Figure 1 (tube, rainbow, N blue to C red):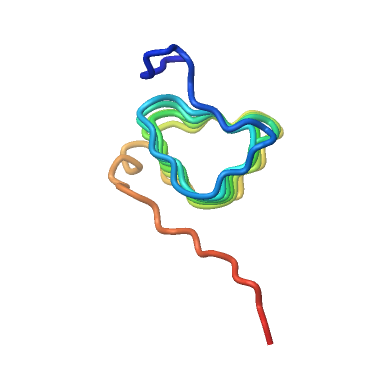
Figure 2: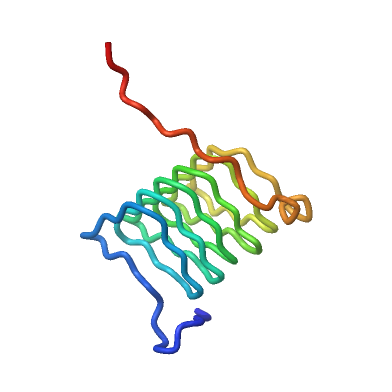
Length: 130
């Protein structure tokens, strides 16, 4: 895995961790826990089998085994593994979907995806009160 960090390691959210907010990184990022917010990186985003992102993703490449509920902008390759679940709007140059993946999304691909500078914000779910 290519990494822009000098220590040779990528940043990581462990499976016992939940983070709420915005992450901006120049290097690769792995999510094995829960991110409630957005992640923007010039590198690769990897969502492990137990990982969840509830928000937006903007990156160079992405490999997803876990769940993403939100909007994805992937400049190059988006790879969906058999255990992944994607819900939202997706823009990517190339999409690789392995058998078993769940892909419930609106998708823009190829050169048209590079024209998408950002995806519309995901509407937040609000609790209904009387």
